[in-house]
Length: 339
Image (cartoon, rainbow, N blue to C red; front, side):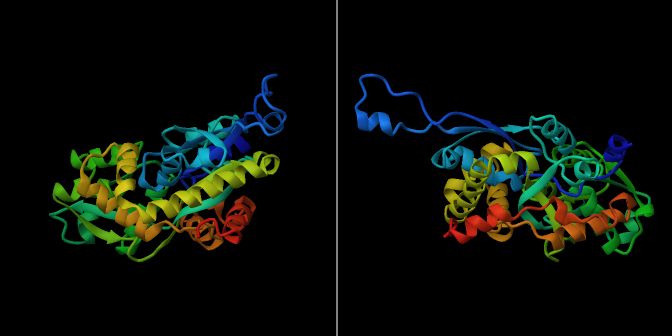
C-alpha cells in the first residue's frame, strides 16, 4: 500500500543534489623514513562522497561549479557528482543507498529523507506559446507539454493556466520526459505550449515563441532544486554534510563575483554554446534567484504542496517541516562562510 501510494503522489521538488554515502580515511600510515613530526600530522585524504543531480538545468549549477572549481576538494571532500536523469529514478537510487532527488513523494511513501538546502525559492518558469497566440482562448483544447508528471514544470504549467483564467480541464497536459524533450517537442510543434526557463527559452524565442505568463516576475513561491539526503546519513555524518553545504555556499558567492569564470562551467553543465543564452541564464539564475544562504523555507514548500493538492489530494495537509533541516545552512551563516 505505501509503495503504491508513493508512486501515485506527485513530487513537489526536483532536487539539485543528494549526498548519500561517503568513504575515505584520515590518511596513509607514515613510512619509516618520515620524521616524527611529519608522521604525527599526516595529510588527511579527502572523504569520498557520492552525489547526484536529477536534471540538466541551471538550477544545478552550485554543486557542478563546486566540483569543477575544486571547492569540494578544498573542503576535504572528493565528490562523485553524477547525473541520473529524472527525479523519480534518482530518488529510487537514493533510497537504495545510491543517489537521489524527489522528496515529498518519497517521504509520504515511507522514505527517510530530508531537504537541507533550497536554491530556487521562487518559480523560474514562464509559459510560452507560438507567436500567433492572441489570448487564453487559444489554449482551449490544446496540448501543453511538461517535463514530467508531477514535477515542477507541471506545477508551473498548472499555475500559469489558472492565472490565465482557464481550468486545467481546458487543456491536455503531456509529459515529455525532460526539459530538453519538452523544448524539442515545442520546436517540432508536437505540443502547443509549455513552461520554460533560460537557456531553453532563448531557442524558443528565436523560433517565434513568446512568453504568455511569467511566474518568475510575479515571485510565485516554489520549491526547486533542493539538496536531499537521508536522515540517517545526515545524523551519522554531520561533519561531511556541513562541509558539503559550506562548499555550495562558497560556490554561490564565487559565481556571483565572477561571471566570466562561471559561464564556461555553465556551458559544460548545460552543453550550450550560445553565449547570449548562457549570459541570459547567468543573469537570471545567479544574479536574481540564487540566495547566498539557501535555507529551506517552509512557506515555499507549503505553497507548492497546496498547489499540488489541487490535482492530488494525497498531499493535502502534509507537514512539510518533517522533511526540512536548516541546521547546516544556519551553521554556515553563523560562521559567515558566505562573507
